[in-house]
Figure: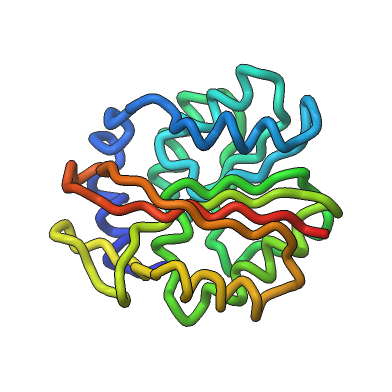
Length: 196
């Protein structure tokens, strides 16, 4: 279930947020290299549509989604394809995708919901499918200066949620430093996993 205050932030700031368009992360290229050419991708939290646009441009069949109707509308204008309005806990697809891309998206999921969200993603992936997701690292849930909710996991917490969710294989977590919409220094955790 999405956090109301976080959804309100994106509703109130959708037009500004979509202008925050840095280029796709290097992790996107690595994710796409793991997938079959022209494979199917579910994007969770498309935001301004930046990553979906990059994936569509190189021939992937992308299904973008976002829990914010306002962001979904902005991304649709950019992409020219429908954007599904969907919270993570509403994902019901079964064996439908070669990959799930969740860049700076699942970090807004309620901490207690993460195991279920990972289980839903696992079911949505085809055998051999890949998940890549990024999180702002920390030691427990909280809000940023803009009022947005974050689950702020550490690597051990992410591994525990993944292990409880499903029988993932090749799960790796890497770390890098960067920032986000708020331009604050941020320690990012990148989770990569494969469905057996």
